[in-house]
Image (cartoon, rainbow, N blue to C red; front, top):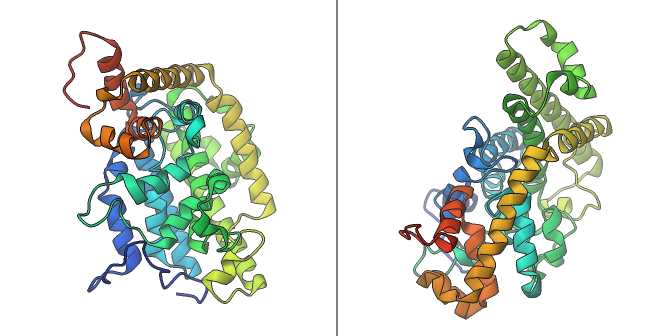
Length: 369
Ligand code: MG
C-alpha cells in the first residue's frame, strides 16, 4: 500500500481488541455484510420499484457493482482495498424505500426533528439502530468507514461534530467509492432503461460518449440488442474507470500527498475523472434525468409510493402503540417522530407495501411489524 492509503484506523467509538487475523477494515466489511440493513438492499431500488421487472438493478446489485469498481481502482492506486470495499458495501444502507420520493417524504415528516438524509441515516444505522452486540448499540465501525458517510455529498450539511475538523475531503478510499458510485449507476441505469423500454436506442445514440464508444468498438453492426447493450455498458464502464485511474494517479503525483491525512486536507478531491470524461458523464447524467428519472411512468410510480410513506408516518404518529416494542422503545428514547422515520426508512419497497396494507386495509393480516 502507498503512503497515502489508510493503513491504520483512528479507532472505534467503543474500544475493541484487534482480531487475531483480520484487519480492522476487513472486520468492518464483514459487519456491514452481516447487518440487517445490508440484506434489505435486495428489495430496495433506486429508479424502479422492485417488483416492476426482475432484470433491474436493486440497491444490492448496484452496491456490488460499486464495490467491484472501487476495489479495482483501489488496488491499482495502492489504496486500502478492504476499506474501500467496506465503504462501498455500506454506502447505500441509509436509503429508505422508494428512492428519492421516499427520502423526500421522510425528510418532510421529520423536518421538526432534524430532517432525513440517507448518508446521515447510514451513519445512524451503523452507530445506533443495528442491534448485534451485547455491549453496545450499532456496529461500532471504524472512524474511516463512518467518515465515508459523514463527508459524502449531501451528508456534509449534517456532518457530525467529530468529523468537522478532520479535513475537507474524506480518505482517498472514500473518494474512490464516490467516483465508482457515479460510474456504476450512470452505466447501469442506461442499461436498465433500455431493457425496460423507457429509453430508446435512437435517443441513447445521441449521447456523445455513447456515440464515441459505439464507434470505437464497432458496436453498430451487432444485431443482437442484448449483446450490443452489454458491450456498450462494458465499454462505458471501462472508459470511465480507465480515465479515473489515469487522472487520479496524476493528481496524487502532482499534489505530492504523503499520508492519508494529507489527502483529506486537499481543497478538492484527488480521485476524479478528467475534465473531458467528467463532462461526458455529466451529459449522460442529464440525459438519464430527462429521459429516465423524469419519465412519467417512473415519476408516477415513485410519487405514489412516496405519498404512502407520508400517510404511514402520520398514521403511526397518531398512536405509536402500533409500533413493535423495539421501535416503541426507540421512540421513548429518541422521540416518536424520529423512531417512526427510522422504522419506515428501514422498510424495503416490498415490506413497505405490506405495512401500508396493515395500516390502512382492515382486512389485511398483521403477521409482521
Ligand atoms: Mg449508490
